[in-house]
Image 1 (tube, one colour):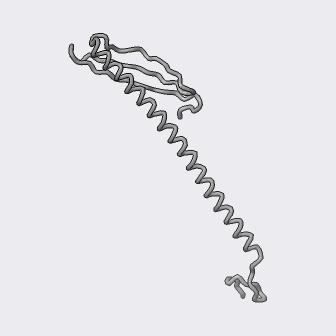
Image 2 (cartoon, helix red, strand yellow):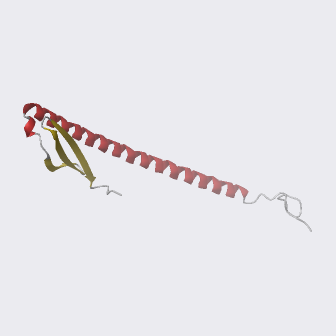
Image 3 (cartoon, helix red, strand yellow):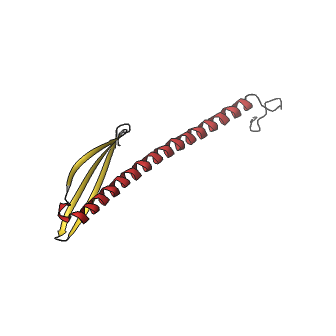
Amino acid sequence: MKALLSGKNLQGSTLKRGVSTLEILIAFAVLMLSLTAVIGVLFGTQSVFVDTETNSEALYKAHAALEEERALSRQDFLAVSTTPSTVELVGSLSYTKKMTVVDLTPCKKQATSTITWINEGRPQK
């Protein structure tokens, strides 16, 4: 009984046919997996960048709204009150602004600025 465990044929010569083709095929498979991973990371990074920029813009709008209410309170404290929601369109983004004012005491109010947004080009999950 003969076993071909060493990679030689019955005459004793080494079997090399098809090995280089197999190596090339494996190399291409590894290359394609690597490229797929790199492309996925690039698109994921771009998405995170856009989300961060949108969050920063919304935060800026919230701070600006609070500063407007603070300035109004210095002119006429009683005029500071809850405002209805307003919609502002910026490109494909639709920002909804809302100012909620709560009277804590006759001399103290708490203002909360809420900014929400919907991106028409990118539905929320």
